[in-house]
Image (cartoon, rainbow, N blue to C red):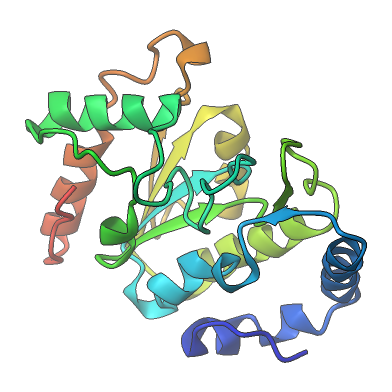
Length: 220
């Protein structure tokens, strides 16, 4: 199957694209679109995280669960929203933690493209969603695909910082070789976690790990 995705990822994931579950997944999305269902993000942004952060450039991974399902929000990067879109509560809390941790004044835009360009792989476990229906594509095959993505990073790279926020993200820990990589765990930044995310200091911790490996830190 010819998937429009950045070349290094296309090479790494070529076998996944030929598997029966992935063929079913793409057919399911095509069928929904042809019947008039609105799906986010738009097609050209479904693989935005991959296109923004090539396989060999990944320094850190922030794992989200599901794309935002409101109009104009999702653009293929976990926790990120398009320019001009009001900041979702979880992203507000992420920016508050960065300010507390590093003294960085929160930006007005919630577009995290600048992180992706520096090697932060902003991966959602599910890459599409029906408009207004949270988790509506969580059982069509995306999780099998993104689990394979995490395994490839774990097996074929070294020294990546995996930032796992909330129980769903933490459940992916078994896919990661902790002998080769760094795993940081915290509560989810959602207000539903009642502030348990605050104080995790994952942003300074990630930079310290990167610096210790001779890599450029992230300008959060």
